[in-house]
Image 1 (cartoon, rainbow, N blue to C red):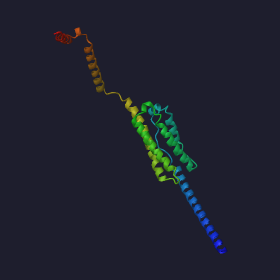
Image 2: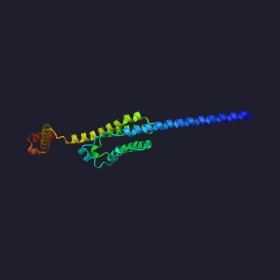
Image 3: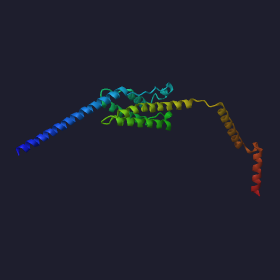
Image 4: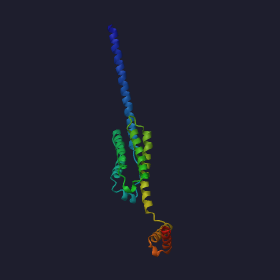
Length: 213
């Protein structure tokens, strides 16, 4: 009986040691993976977005949400994976604010659509960075995609400005002037008194005769 009790405790001890060794191994493996992920993110976390041209910058000077987002985008997290996780969450949050305060001149479906696509990419980036084991291949793929979507937003803003500055063609101006002249002539005829428009006076006279029969 005593031997069985000793054997039982021996088995428990061996099992506990085995579990502890496994936990230590898993912890070491996780630490190694986290270190590798941190190295990859630290070397590759950047967004290549050219600055907006001066005309766009002038028009969005008071768009505070845009400036807050760009500032957040270019501040590179350092030190730990948690820094990258917090950064991804902050980018998602600030990206969503862009849709709520678009300047009136740029508040158009094309701009909203591009900002929405940008936010979809940011949300995906946040998802992959906040996994227990970060999928660095997915993150590295998304970083340039975020840059491309942001550049697309800036290009759309610039396109709106360019289109607004295109002068009307000479032929279009002549056509518009001709239409205005025709409208004015019709209006003048309609507003003429009967005595100044002989044909209209004759028509009115015939109408009166018919009514008096």
